[in-house]
Length: 426
Length: 168
Image (cartoon, rainbow over all chains, first blue to last red):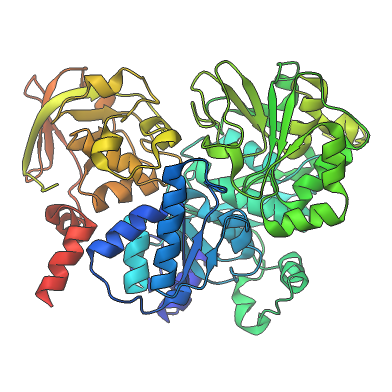
């Protein structure tokens, strides 16, 4: 069987097939950068003394990590990126109100079968939409912007077969934390995670985006889902009609000798203990640990589905005394939907604070930096030492449902009791 | 940073899974100057490390060095601190590419952590693809592919591109 990833590369090269391990040079369809990695991209392009970018429509620039700017340096970075976009006629420029790069890229720009790179490790997210996408450094993003192409080593596949169906109390976050707990932080190093199996039918695009996003925490180069009815409907809802005839090769196939099998029926709410996303256990192993702050947001926990389940649990309830909950929609679009459907009011009533669509405190820059000895439970994707602020803080990763349940109780808590879950089927 | 065939330096030892947040904490990312970033290199691992690191030191680390965020600032912080080479049991993917593109020598040697002690003077020989320990013992590493060698010899991707531009 040919992996989806190798088939995307083969098409890009106009070849019948390419083998894993082959070094190939291919044209890239999109190059993404943001306000942390962008300034280095600009430095490289400027020192090459390039007068024009041949294909400015290739380039996507986001102001999301420092939005709105927390200090003068960040404001100056934004100014520099704006000037660059104007000078080189880059139309895909996303201002501080638009939201997180990975979410916005998946609200229209990314199409199945494309080859996309981004100067951000979580660029793996777009594999959820049946594309090849991976993170690169700023120099390589600059190289690709100037030349329109980049070299890749075609990755070996790491097939994951999904069985069963995901219960209502579990989400994509729980699935990927489960996978990481089994394979470790290097388990998929340099490899292409490829998902298949009957369990796909129970995974919404929101779940898949989070799974592909955090595949990089297991070292993966990319993580791709096939193009199925769920993806097609997702694009239709965005008003995008895909040319399905040309995308036939991305359709689901029967699982082939998987490297790993995951039974979704038994996925429990999971929690990753500090300081590693792979140090994940079922939430029952951490229940009762006191929490100071909860965060719902980021490119793995700030989508509409994440806010929806948070609101479902928070409705009519109040945060535990002394506990803070920061909620940040992942994009302007998500924010708009949450406003229209009354979610924001529910958050307000519960005592949460709402931030502007952006990366928020996930990377420890602003909008909720954590202090010494504080314990945070977050729906974001990294819990490395010092990631969200103080190196003496403890950061636990979990699904939005688990985050909210924990902020209601003031201790790490199982969300199942708030979601009317029946006894777990094991 | 231009490449030398032979690099000799004092080993500074680090553990497994040193992530890029630990190499350069996010609060410093508003700068892109290697000198400035270098002042804070590895502050996230141990706040006393930036003062301990001397120009020309060689880092010896465990598995999965450079995991996490794609920030090229991590490589700039290391080169800015005057470090010429990192030897590790294994590297995370994006960091490895960033290092090559920025002229930082990255060498993978499984088992290196047990062979080298903190403060050992070690010698890297690129021509013969070896690392020599104070005992005289030589450890081999895999030779770099020609394409990668060209980028490294130029001192990084940018310098390589400039050279290529001059040729055409």
